[in-house]
Image (cartoon, rainbow, N blue to C red; front, side, top):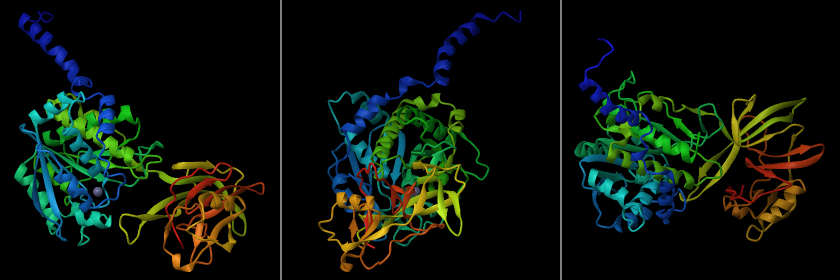
Length: 492
Ligand SMILES: [Zn+2]
């Protein structure tokens, strides 16, 4: 008897078995193929945003030109009086809220949202089924650029220097009040909290940058999991699936320690399944244009999976299997290089290049310095050289004064090969930005140089008496094969 099942139970098992198997597998049917996501990202890229730095005034015309597929409303004003707007799309019952740039200098996802708006307004491209599915099932509300005053200066905080993402409880800032109210009024089922993180995070202990990091924020100190948070985790698993196909191994999971002052944690607690996306780094993508494309792809696919309930097929375990973020990257890692004090000794040098703001917030220069030294065997570099036999030597200043207007990159490279690491120019140009691969000295009389922590990084790497590489302000230049990039420097 124990081995014989009643016929009704057998039929029931036969009935549920196929659906069980698709539910625990990747449930491809409800995903958009990655090649389609790629094609859509390419077709609908918003060309008004070629770089990360843009202002509220740059964005507003793009809101105003939206078709009547969108309705928009001003939710309120920032401290300095800039409008914070929402745009709504779709007539479905599942509500999704996406907001970007609570931190003014974290604009990658804002660009991707405008790519998405273009996509939603598209036609005759083979994507009609996707649009119909979204518009029939979802009511999507977008709030791009929550912190327009911060964006104006390309800084993290708002005009009162309050971090909006630590202002949920006190709600001192008008921007925080607006975002909080927007959730309470709309009561979305899902929320996407869109940020950028620094470019030095890796996916686990691998050498891959965490190009995208994800998190289903905790809603309590115990980092408990209820249905609300679990749904967010499953949507993230769907995003991870796209990313593993597009950019394998470049995904990290952000620390889920509960932050009682943050929006994501509180929205999760109030019943909105909240997903944090952090745009990190990718090699040779300083303006994060490839990362913007990844944002577009995973957000569009996630919306589709929410519209179709496709995310329900994923497991929580798959979320926890995403490697944690670790901070293991340098812009440039030079391994085993010889330094000279009273004796010669060898170290690994880890160099990072920081962006420094200038009067024009739409521009910046870079300051390279030694972030760490010693045994850096657990670190990786976006650029890495094994310095076996290489010795750090300082560079010379070229004797003749150059004209900044006419001096060329090729002339600078030629001087580097001759052992010059700096040129002098008119003192009045001090502070001017330039793109030359050499130090340009205005009022400064010496090339900034040191070998200690925090020292500016300007030196040659020499082997057997021959100069092999120049390091100019943290940029590595191979003297045998100097490629041309956009060096972001300023006259010293
Ligand atoms: Zn942020």
